[in-house]
Image (cartoon, rainbow, N blue to C red; front, side):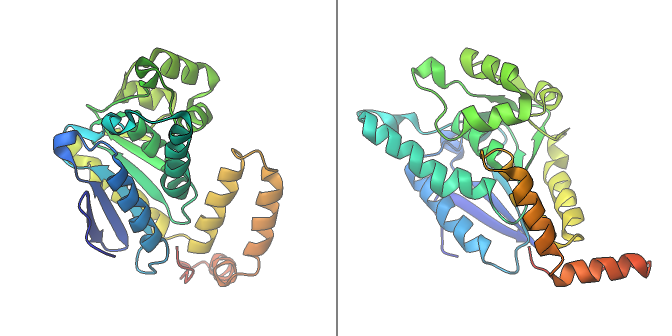
Length: 261
């Protein structure tokens, strides 16, 4: 894994902590940052020493306060499509389908592309002061990194329509009530809560966790999710983790899983 200008990488045991590091720009997603994220995610996907990821922002103000709007100026319709397509394919969808658990640690404002990157994560934990929203309609555009698709899956069509059509922000408690985030915690507990969740997941079968992520995601893709689940369930029977898990259950002991996340 190389050196990055806009990202910080910290390893904590089996966990990789990625910090988007543009605090003077409220960690806005410019092309360079998205490119670095794509590169780093690719490296972590195949790194057998890393079992999970925490994604957060530098400073106390923002997780990611949106895309770098200045980069949108002067582009044609086709160039606009290309911007959205690249971000979706190489960053948002990679996080969404990552075979290892990815937790978004929302440490402040998560707006526009920032909320979309958080929505791509498998689990979200927010600080009490966090603010979230998709304000794109106030700029004459719409969410382009999956917000119109992933937000309704979490909060339902009605609430997603309200958030996207008004462009208004919501607070952390409201986000918790609506299902945008899993937990709301004091800022001092943010990383600890994320690491505790991952450490619990690490005690489970890595191969089963990866299969579960794939099957859950299939419910949103228009494919036959039940068929994906059935196939993944069947494949589990051929894994060493399944044999170990069943043996441990029958022998009333703690399983020793060897399948890597």
